[in-house]
Image 1: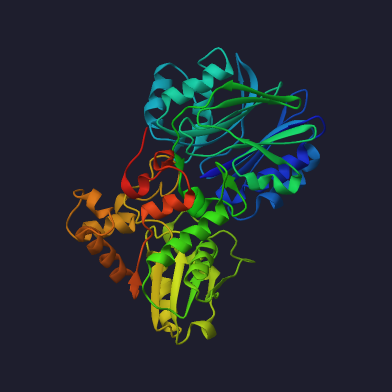
Image 2: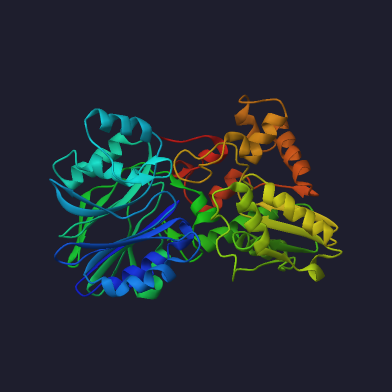
Length: 466
């Protein structure tokens, strides 16, 4: 996915930029970057963070940065920020995006005798392409609107100019951005949790398609938000940091409600509930509170030498690293019936390995309770499951194994139908667990608290707006 942070102040902004960007590190694993406007130009730094942390990589650079405004990024797709010199002036840009028609837009640019100097994952840098589309117009506002019109997918961005910062949210709001303020300064971030320890308070949640221009003296709305919104539900289920809020809904509280909903539908008996660290813990706490059974840590995470489980690009290595990080507590597991909550089951490979370990440690029953529905459709709008084929998704693989292919997908996505029951049973057998019960989509939406039409649920039911 990725996260962005920007700040502008009447005094030096570098420390706030450094810490604010770092608080988006859970959103990406490949590259980190910062750019500061010095008064005479731009200073930037970009580092590979696949094997280390943002804070560690950028601390030696801090003496080089001085300025009152800056932007930062954690990216899974490319090296950012990039500095652009154009008829609009010189500016730095960072994006969180997935451009579905990137090849078409690349071909369009090359046909117009334009060129690219940056590279992203697999080819064209999405951020450079976005900057190019902006520069087709006569103002930053018109240029950003041009991006909204041209791209299919999603794009949220920050532009740092010599006069201030433009903050623009994806036209359907699939990725969030929040505005904060404190005395003499403003900040914008993908995660509101970036604000807490730098004394910034939430001012507003920027709306879908909204464009703000921010200076140290105030904020101007340059484009009103669109009426339609489809924010990604996975922000609450998995991506989001527990202390963050989107559209006024706290992540941790939502996860408690997800776990409680799973518990209310569950008729199985167990000795205790546990969460797969870290993303399943809050769901398991919610389950425990509702079901009135103990919460215990059957697995603990070892992080000193295994910091980033999905860092390797090879899926087999990602699974290995993820498994090596989790250590079973055998004394708790032996002789017990255990409910395990996790955010989701994407492929199921790692889960299958964990289940074998649990039974080897003496568990008598393993009941798996994912906090979201069965994944049937690959993500079209963010970088979740972007490298996976359709059959890599546990739900779609089960449908394929049942001999159905691309038909009756709506029935497979509907709890209670014969096809849904058959799909869940196929997944259960493949994982080797005692029982498997997924979250109902209606319960997930109730836990989030937003109307269905305002939340992107494409991964589960195929519905979406482009």
